[in-house]
Amino acid sequence: MKILVTGGAGFIGSAVIRYIINSTDDSVVNVDKLTYAGNLDNLKGVSSSERYAFEKVDICDLPELERVFDQHKPDAVMHLAAESHVDRSIEGPAAFIETNIVGTCNLLEVARAYWSKLPETQKNSFRFHHVSTDEVYGDLPHPLEEANACQRLFTETTSYAPSSPYSASKASSDHLVRAWMRTYGLPVIVTNCSNNYGPYHFPEKLIPHVILNALHGKSLPVYGAGDQIRDWLYVEDHAKALHLVVTTGVAGETYNIGGHNEKMNIDVVKTICRILDQEIGKSGLSEGYGGLIKNVKDRPGHDRRYAIDASKIEKELGWKPVETFESGLEKTIHWYLENEHWWSRVLNGDYKLTRIGEAL
Ligand SMILES: NC(=O)c1ccc[n+]([C@@H]2O[C@H](COP(=O)([O-])OP(=O)(O)OC[C@H]3O[C@@H](n4cnc5c(N)ncnc54)[C@H](O)[C@@H]3O)[C@@H](O)[C@H]2O)c1
Image (cartoon, rainbow, N blue to C red):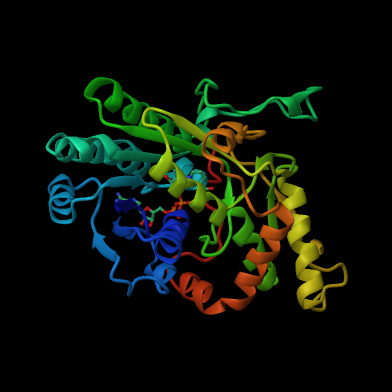
């Protein structure tokens, strides 16, 4: 099977491609514009495979997308290309509208034209898999504010209520994808996943940001009181789930993907500090890395709690995450300690561990 993966040079897309090349017989065409978040270093171990091809293409460029479909003739699409950082969406929403909404619409149109001309058997097995986020559902009650809040989880039928320009743009793209099935019959699948973490994560996101700031002896910013809750999933568990969905999922279905790991941000930061204290000593810091924690002004519109009910994908497709939060976090920290060449190249570019989107 040949899978066209958009956004394959990003954090999750590269994990998907590494998984497909290393653990399956499928082929990949990686379509990526290489924005600040796209990094071909993420694919160094697999890019020489005969089953891998790269196309530096913007999903907003319709003629180029048509050429890529014509040339590579994929059996399925996994659509991950997006602007993905909430803080950046607060500072500049336009790129999010352009890539996440207009780009998804272009991709749907090109995929539809291509799919409609396929022979019947290929037409039936073709899938357009849209990779989305739990942030489209808005936020859930928080246990500090409501008794029994922990019993409330996002399911596949939870109503959409996005809070940020990022989540609103992803919600729009989810609606477009489902409409292309209802209106044109394109066989689509949507997955909505919780927060990912793991190797090759761009250091503007919480976990790598804290690890790298700590290694540089910089303060560890925690938004507000740090009591916001996220449901963490190790990226390689997500990559396996996504491949299972595109190869065995039912067209027209939505699958929520999550790791059953609800954690307050402040606890995530303290756990990273504790592991770093154990792994590399306290580096002359009397209180250890935890002494670097600093509460900063909260993000505008910050969602309080996300938590996924992943029972549908577990029951229907037999997926379960392998990593616990503790085992995944230890793997992640070891990876950053062992891969300074990767993150020093990232930090030598435009991004300097600075905060984005504090405005308002
Ligand atoms: N990171 C998470 O925790 C998380 C959780 C759930 C869902 N998601 C979704 O998964 C997908 C991947 O997320 P990620 O964290 O890997 O993102 P990322 O920001 O690390 O990577 C995005 C990739 O898309 C590429 N890209 C951006 N605009 C493009 C365009 N116009 N044309 C072609 N390529 C373009 C970038 O170059 C980059 O390689 C996104 O759709 C995101 O909404 C992410």
